[in-house]
Length: 112
Image (cartoon, rainbow, N blue to C red; front, side, top):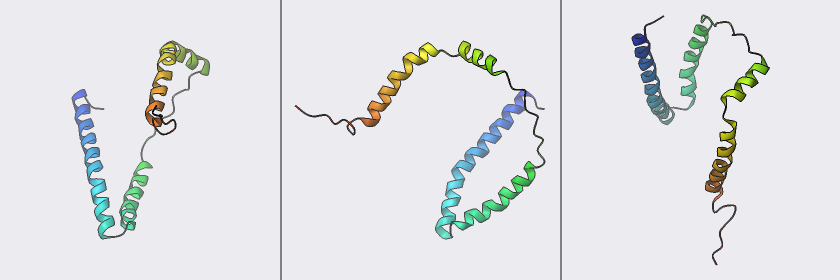
C-alpha cells in the first residue's frame, strides 16, 4: 500500500487531526451550549454521523481469521505468562492500592 516513510507520515497526520479534535471539540461544544441549546450539538453531529454511516457501507471488511483451538490457546498462555511473578506481585500491589484508597476512611487511627 505505502512505503515505510509514507506510513509514518500518514500516522502523524492522523494523530495530529485527532489531537486537534480533542482540543477543539469541547471548546466548540461549550460555545454551542452557552450561546444556543445543547440540541445544536445533536443537530450538527446527526448529518456527520449519517454521512459516516453511509461511507461505512462501502468499506470492504476482511474475512475473519480462523480461530485457534482453545487447547492450543491455553498452552500458549501457560508458556508466555509469568504466573509466578504475577502471583508474587499482584497481592502486594492490591494491598498498597487498598491502603491508599481506604486510608483514614474505613479504619481510622486512634491516637494513644
